[in-house]
Length: 299
Image: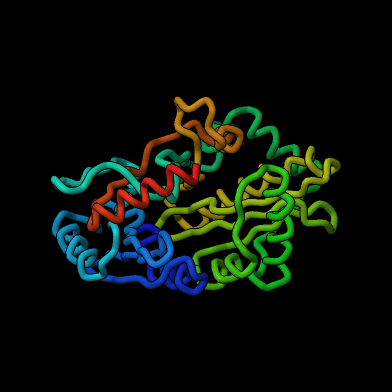
């Protein structure tokens, strides 16, 4: 079971107003989300072969009708092998993609020395450089002060790199409701210069959020590399089997906005795999087609 298919995850989404409500049956969690004004969709995110089958799909279609939603979206998750849904009225597509189909992973069955040896030379070098420069990484208490420090760095990062962020309350809810989450802070002397939020659930460690200072005098200290290495070591300590970097560009997409993020992550591993396939079942075709037309105009 993935972290996204846990009750704590669903309650965090509910508390932070990301979802209207959720349903649980047959070991599968279903999110009801607002998609436009008073229209809703059902989302079943990141299910694997062990927890999902076509019998559940039949029940989900009935739930979509009972809830009068526009559509049902299912996203699969498979680190070893993906799986396909078989239904004549469900197609490969999505209304909203929550994670990219591709991710970078580290096989944690390998020793730390093996993991280091498989990194790009620049990755190993930057980890050692950060240590040599005096960077210290700690697993921080999940209190308001530390979460605020992370959030302040996040505002710097998003301003610099032009990507979206969540509210401070969202990160507070995330860290306080997801028991398996951890907050790591990287210090140079007394100053926090990078930070990351990670989860360690069901044998899967996930690099979820990161942030770093924009101050040029700290940028060459390579603290994000030591931060990552610390999180990887923690995953080994907790007997996780996979370390997932999330969100990397498709290998053939040279213009992806994730290209620079992928470049950073690929210094730790060359193991980039396709893990997710999206499927959609349209419950109300008139409303769905109308929404698709509206989205085209918004672009």
